[in-house]
Length: 357
Image 1 (cartoon, rainbow, N blue to C red):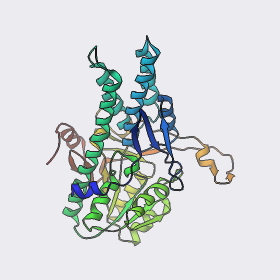
Image 2 (cartoon, rainbow, N blue to C red; image 1 turned 180 degrees about the vertical axis):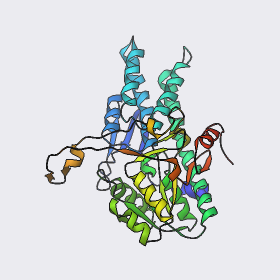
Image 3 (cartoon, one colour; image 1 turned 30 degrees about the vertical axis):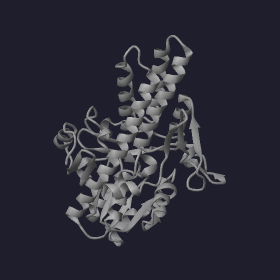
Image 4 (cartoon, one colour; image 1 turned 135 degrees about the horizontal axis):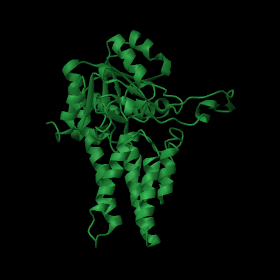
């Protein structure tokens, strides 16, 4: 399975090359494949805030490389570089405040520079750490895909009809994806009849990115409006909702792309299993429940503007994420193993072990 999944790696969105971070600009997909070359940390912050790069793991990986650029810039400036580097660290941390993987990656990078030897090349050391973060996410994607398929096979082994939301694929990760990684693995096992992907407004990650990824790999995908989800669960025989996550609290509550919560409610009503696929780095034990997760809001213009025209000016609320309570989740799949019916004790147990085999 692992070898076949590696062979299926076709989409890459993050590259380090010639001393620069290259990001596939996801705002232009699928019409245009344009790469942004970031040589300064401010460009990485802008790319994250501006949605050129998105997806929890991709954001964390990009931020790690961003600190490499920051270290290079600050050392070149001479004395007092440490205070300036802390400011860069903070700018990256504040770029997307809900994303647990961002803080995990940044803290891992900070730990690396703090334990550096006096004679060590700090830029080289941080680059090696960023590459390790990138590679570990790629490996985690492969492991989660295999665990997810095993879970599906245990409950329902025949061809499945999936529903997914947002984009938790290769564009959002360092490898084949989380939710879409599981679906890719299921496709290789002959377990996918069809995937329904909703549009995911207002940034249309589902229609622009997820449908593009799946169609390019020959996976049967049908695009639908966000509001069609419950109707399709009722009429199309959907068996699994598979989604990613941006943050998981200690009790198993999950912050994900806005609309995930209502999908979980609809899935519970229609007897559809609900799977969250995310690396253990998305778990923050300092957050007791979903109530403690900071939820980002975006800019009003993202809702008030449509191609070619501007909507009527009214008050706007534009949350990016919502929280799905743990009691609506059938399983959380991580690279350390699978938690069915998650709760505080199961989450703590998973975090304390290295990996299930």
